[in-house]
Length: 374
Image (cartoon, rainbow, N blue to C red; front, top):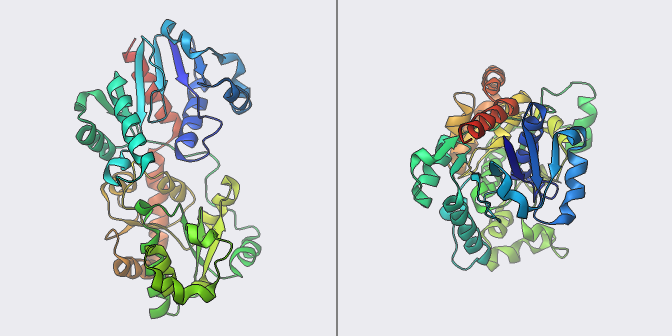
């Protein structure tokens, strides 16, 4: 079987979809057997980056231009989009349809995302959803029959695992001044609900004597990246009113206990998960929630918003709170931080739960799907 893969963004996308595509493609090449893969970057300039990423598997694939895709049996598009239309079978992975749930009519990018994802769904012979929740959303928003959608759950990268206690005190001293911490990784996008976490942590610090810091990895809110921003503008921020996150930040009393870490690599991320007292995942909407598996594998207790996909992926391992409710999050997080037995049982449940997921298992499911479409 001649299988093509759209690798247009493989070397450029370092976020969720790129991470997923790299893991799956690596696994597919690992057990390629008698099947040969044909990689197709839309732009020639992207080939060099793909070669570097997949160098150990150089004898198991070849590059072909997208214009030659018609001679293949099937092409897989991992990117929520289809930018060329071969005359063979097409499998498209649609990770989520957040742009339909969180849509603002004055955002041109959101219009474009909607248009691309509709085109991708229409062009696909089969759609891969990354959760049962996403399958339901795709079927509903894109008017796709359920039998055209198959669910394949994500795995997690092998670098993630329980953190070594070696030099843990040095790590804490460097990042939090030696204090224990609660961890978050993500962006300030509305659906990530960073505001809920900031308000909840501030309430918890005000109502209890916990020594914890809140360590935030990922992008800061835009106003905190402004060179002119200083704390002396807090009162002015309260008067501006145009940016809710500015208002929230202006009202927070425990700013000194919130540490903005910025982007971190996987090696550091393992330590951040593994040495934290709890990982908080306050999202209002996710297609899957890859950090759930990463945190589980690092033996980290998770306090997560009670949304369907986190129930699907997390099972009974996290402690759940009402989405968008800072008071409930503060209460649930406080219980986890105060009860060592509860935290210990959550770690054990997470390590057990994560065994249900792997990139190898996911890639095998993709491969079986491809075979059914011969």
